[in-house]
Amino acid sequence: MKAKARCVVAAITLLLASRWATAATVDLADWALKKDADLYGIGGTLPANVMTTGFDFGTGLGTLTTIITGAGDHFVGWFLDHEIDELANLWYNETGSASGSPSVGQTWEIDEPGFGQSGGSGPYVGDIYNHLELSDPHDSLLDNLVFTSGNDTITGPDDVSMALGWRFLLGTGDEASISLTVSAVRPADGFYLTQTDPDSNASIFMYGILSSRGVTVPTPAPLLLIAPVLLGFSRIARQTQRMRVAKDDADLRQIFAKR
Ligand SMILES: [Ca+2]
Ligand SMILES: [Ca+2]
Ligand SMILES: [Ca+2]
Ligand SMILES: [Ca+2]
Image (cartoon, rainbow, N blue to C red):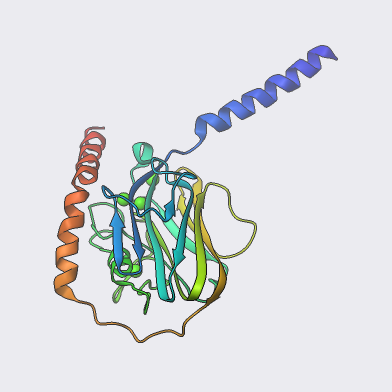
């Protein structure tokens, strides 16, 4: 019996070891926060009312909490560009989906992050980042769609990035707390976004909640006109910030091309 028990323990240990060995690697390549009129991004510093202690900026897993006060309309939106198993199968072999129904005032988007690098579904450039950047307390431009940019839609796979936004109204003395979580564990219910690497058979899940005292959700505003000049300047600034990432991508392509 003792030998049999030892066999069972050994089998379980082997199973657990193999699961650890095959666990996918998740990296956060880029992030941005739009808080009311202000945009924060990679290489910059987040404002003091964003709590990051529960979030790992290396893996992009954990919880980010933003506290908002001040009477009037508000917008809080997060853009996160994760890569799953980039070293094993690169970053553009991934897909995304939305599950459940967003809450009132909540918007979302899953798209290629805006660089249209080679690989994935070809010459396709997503508009998710521009949508986050141009959202404000009066309107969220997040399109509630997967891999759709203007009139262009792809089925993927491609480079997946995800965004969640909230519009809400605060009265005098009100306070809102927006918690955004990215986890490798699928939520039991509620609205959430999924990013999947089918080659790694691995997924991450992004969801959030707005909790508040005395918050009401404003009615939707008409679409704002996009300011092309503003868009151009911000694209240049962001591309400069992303040069390191782009270089890493180029290095990886060279490595894989040699294989
Ligand atoms: Ca991948
Ligand atoms: Ca889009
Ligand atoms: Ca990426
Ligand atoms: Ca990605």
